Amino acid sequence: MTEENNNTFRHVMPLQIRFNDVDKFGHVNNTIFFQFYDTAKTDYFASVCKGVDWERVAIVVVKIEAEFLAQIKAGSHIAARTRVFKMGHKSFHLEQDVIDTDTQEVKCRCMSVMVLYDLVHQQTMPFPDEWRQAISEYDGLE
Image (tube, rainbow, N blue to C red; front, top):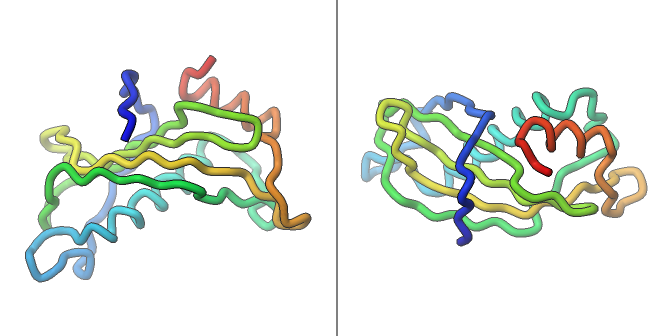
């Protein structure tokens, strides 16, 4: 997994650990992290790219990679951090992690490549200029 040098995240979303997120070993099951990442990226795009018609546009994961660094136990205080670190014509690279908000320890890191998808025409689509500008300004991309 490629680790980016710029670990500045503007988007930080507190997460709640639910009863059934914890497995019989007393820690958050690794499959739950992907639900955390989905929740955070949904909030990221709702915050950064206003007015998206989600009936016409989707964001599709084409590659995802997670590195589990430390366990999370029930009762921990956690948050997901999200940022776009690279944008192409139709795709972008998203970096996310889950941190312990008390210690700032990174518990898991996730890198994904995503594409924009036109649900009406059933094909990938280029980034709308307003999305590109909003993301670039928000995450400090050139």
